[in-house]
Amino acid sequence: MKEYPIIDRTSHKVAVMMGGTSSEKEISINSGTAIAQGLSQLGWKITPMILENDSITQSDLSGIDCVFIALHGGFGENGELQSVLEEWGIPYTGSGPKACQICMNKKTTKDLLIKGNLPTPDFIVAHKHQPLPILDNVLYPVAVKPVAEGSSIGLTCVKKFADLKAALKKAWEFGEEALIETWIEGHEITFGILGEEALPLVEILSAEEFYNYTAKYDSHLTRYLVPAPLEDQETDMIQKMGLEAFKLLGCYGYARVDMLLTPDMKPYILELNTVPGFTMTSLFPKAARAANLSFGELCERLIIHALERHPKEHADQK
Image 1: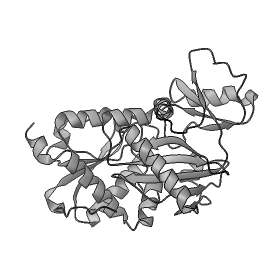
Image 2: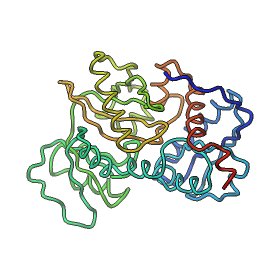
Image 3: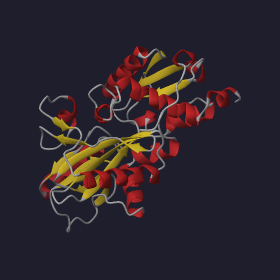
């Protein structure tokens, strides 16, 4: 991996922002707590910030040199927080407002992937307040999911038409648009991108029917193979495809790519997550450990990326 500059950890005060009001608040607090601990152990000056609502003031960040964003979903991941920090000239981890907005919306992401000739499962969008699209040619099973939620929240595997209405109702609890997406059987693959480098692949062997919320956070039976047991050429193909998607969507610093791989090794990109889970056992840190990066070192590198893009002296001039 690329060489990173030596940085004076004691000269930068970092706010780790977590909490918020999204359905992923609890996960966000777990991520933020782990990040704060990991960075503190390396000697960084850390200020944990647990948001109770979707707003901050400039005075909340007085004296802060960089914000480590650990807010999953909503305000912290849809570009709103990033826009505010841009306006105030405060460096922050991860992608900019536009890329966050794109990646938070699964429909927009898939539209751009298709335009860029990158494979993603076929889909239809169902609007809560509009007639259902024509579904005569839909082959079951399908995945029904909210357009703008993470952690598999609101996701249902629908195996027959009779169950579709209930699945859509569940997805619409989290927004007015839902995806009806072709269900791809095969390997569940995810990996992190750090800077412009792909980390080792992780294969998920879910204890549930699919990798749902329970399998991610409540099950001790889900297994993770790191690195994924694939041939080198298959690994290279998947990593290159993920990097191409990362650049296509305008991501910066880091992201997690979620993919499905059919038994005949055909890959499909599901989405890119610009603020992935960041507990000690989350997928992105698992991939980093396979690249010989400790949890604290991984967090530190994201801060370095943030400071490289928005040097503090630029912020002080605003």
